Image 1: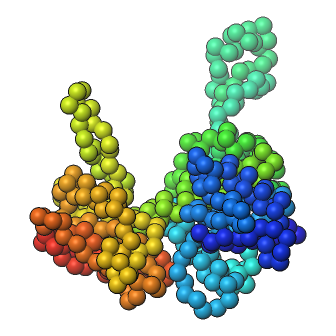
Image 2: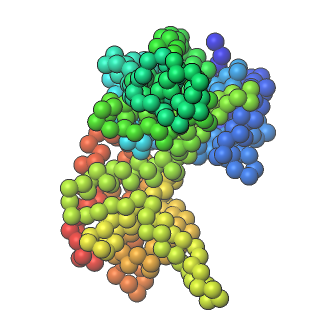
Length: 439
């Protein structure tokens, strides 16, 4: 069985021949695989830094799998220091799966996965296990079918007669009829996507139980056409009331086969990759939580909206430097709150009055304040023990000469219990400094 290594963001894994290190040839293959990811950046070290004595993980999490080893990178979520490293990693995997489920709008049930499974298996095997269990359960209700148009030359009329084809092809052979008809078929886009996902995961998984499940599913889809992942017709799939049970499976197939907050690659012989850029994932996670927290209220939430420009050219009146705030909260036609998420570590105020907030981030919020006329702006970070106390607003600042308030705040992603209610209580049950709205 090939070895598996686990790191957290920004941690280092020594390479060499000493105990606890990864052999240098394995490290080299992981580095080469990491460089194939779009997250690698111009220098190629955006996923893994290949340093003199070790490999250092960056702000990208997930799994890299070569022919001889696996490397799992977990997010740096502050779950405390109690318990063994395996138990801590298990807790982080649970939180990461929860974040993915919220960000991708998936209903993922994890009740069948035991505590031992969370400790023993990598994130990739956990996700494969969830997908297989969900697919097997859904298939018990039947394989989806729909009517597909066919054209064929038959001895008896079926459907309608294709008149142009009949008189051009069979004018001299009236015993053959050019028929056009619909037939219920299982060989449809949705099933082709499921088959492609099963085939893809069969090549990635190394867990014996997962491999057995995937072999069983391969048999179920034996009569479905094999379509390479790049050629799959995703647009042809329409999820409606007749196939609603397949919505989450369709979303998970996109997770494995398409570039959404992550990338999967293969076919070069280097291995397989399943990676997530934590800044983007945290942004989408928080955005959906805010949308849920304010659902049913008078407020409207837009994600990556606004799109106002900072400057206009005096030469040709062209607008330049477009803005896209992570989260805008509206009351009527007025933006009353701008939230920008930052997957960074916020410092305690006692250590740094600026709390480690980047000056560029403050300038960005000042631009949002000017363009969107919002009285309240929040820089939202993940909570950690070093901040002390509870999640929520950590500090407030007033823009000089204005009533606008810019605040720093934190959200405890390590605790998934009642997180929507907690978010609502921590941020939206107060009156804004400008007095425009009561959340």
